[in-house]
Length: 163
Image 1: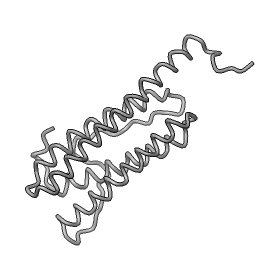
Image 2 (image 1 turned 90 degrees about the horizontal axis):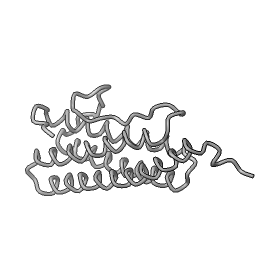
Image 3 (image 1 turned 180 degrees about the vertical axis):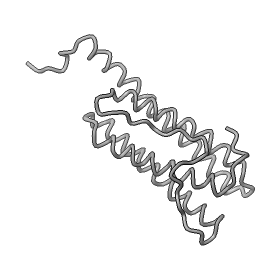
């Protein structure tokens, strides 16, 4: 991912905004899903995004001093948003959107790491990139499972009806 045209402040604000939005979406989705295992995974992902945001806010203050963190309404940095769709959409659509966002976040943090000269920050951002890849794999697993159950519902619409 080429982020060379963006300044450090814009990149950090975009990253913080992305983590805030991802945390919110994972929390909101966790409340909506009936599958307890998926709910726990989404809550875990929300907590991870919160930790990322906290570190990024620390990094922002380290780089920008006392400057107040004001998140942009819309960012020019090419980070995809997770499309939550409507409540009637299958969960696989949301999971697929989240997977794309996590892959983009991985590429973003790898690119952002290269913008820092100090090893500690660079290594931490590389860890973030690796964690985003782990989030992708969690979502991929849930996506595959959701697709199977959605296919069953299409083939046998009464599958979940009790006796």
